[in-house]
Amino acid sequence: MRLNQLSLRAAGVIDHIEALSTHDAIAQRLGELGFVPGEPVKVIAFGPLGGDPMAVEIGFTRFALRRSEAHRIVLRDNTAATAPSCAAQPHEQADPAAPSPAASTADSSSHQAPVAGPLA
Image (cartoon, rainbow, N blue to C red; front, side, top):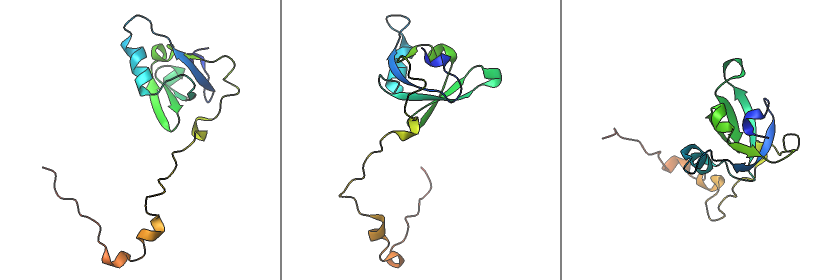
């Protein structure tokens, strides 16, 4: 199944990107944007009358794709019903060396917020 064949709110897992030619710039760009094998993807909207573009979500990032672009994205077999939710992706863990928010509020009266000046 291909991404452009998924229905609204259906999810799948990317198997591969199928290039239409040897130097398919769109297929290459899709990979650079995060459309990579094993990544869950979900259809979140369609254009007017169910047409172009279609909006898809990978993790917390949303993309608008033409159906011709989405056709290049091949999904794993039978993943539309079993794919994990895109929002359920593991989050980056906090840096243990970073100060906690509670530590920075101990004496907020002596600290002033920086003021941004005009852009040059």
